[in-house]
Length: 351
Image (tube, rainbow, N blue to C red; front, side, top):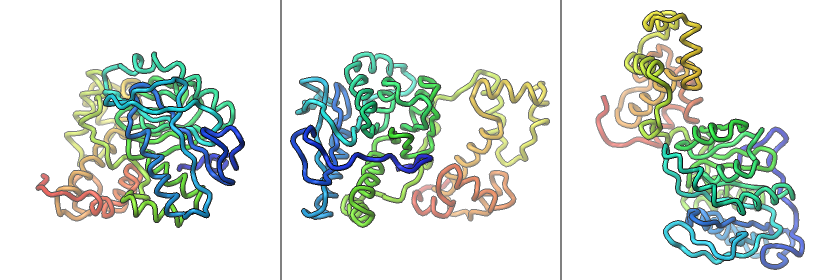
């Protein structure tokens, strides 16, 4: 889990008499998973299942985990029509909020959240009581609805990060991160990032050895640091109006050319100041930031599909110094070029 300025979120200690089911053993961590209509059933059970594995790895003498599926409702039907057995939401140490189906670019998040007022109120109350609140994937939208993301750093699925930033302008959305914790509130990236969170929870509650062994038993990668390598820009809505679209197209078609802001502005008949102002207003970033992201995207493709050397790939996208390219690539993807190639190499012949 990402650390906040004053260290990772503090979990409550030994459970009291008001746990989700009954008093737990000393040192047992009480985890509640909030079920609600239409939530992803797999995300409801993903964290509990991994915690069950961790408890087996740790052994019967180690403090374990007491997990309950909780809801302010008496009946819950999750995704795919799965009916969930739920319990009333009582005092827990960690409240996990799963995600739900959300199609990008459809604007249906408003409709999905409109019927979840009881859940938003429950999340808000738990946070006010000092419970560590965690969202999985687009469960971050429910945390935003509860008012928990204002003034906090957060993440969510890269596919919906832009929508979260627009819907919750008070949040500092970090779409490159897998897990972000800020003052007792944790948000995670898409789907499988629930395991990155769960492993970190195990690491802090049961120790590094148990977390490492659990990851190996479950075949889960416990060394990921970023969701950027998994981003497919073709699935993202392209921001901007006709002006910024034309600038982006020009940059994309000239990846290997030296970045020259005055020349770029002259090509579009505007001053550099006007270019930067209009481009930033329409896309939320600078032309250089767009160019760097496009260069990294092209480099990812070449690393995945060709045998070209890192130096040759760097030169192909405009970098004479492979070290400069490697630094930029690592900043965007969380991996050095050679490590990225090892992890994501696939067949094919890329141009």
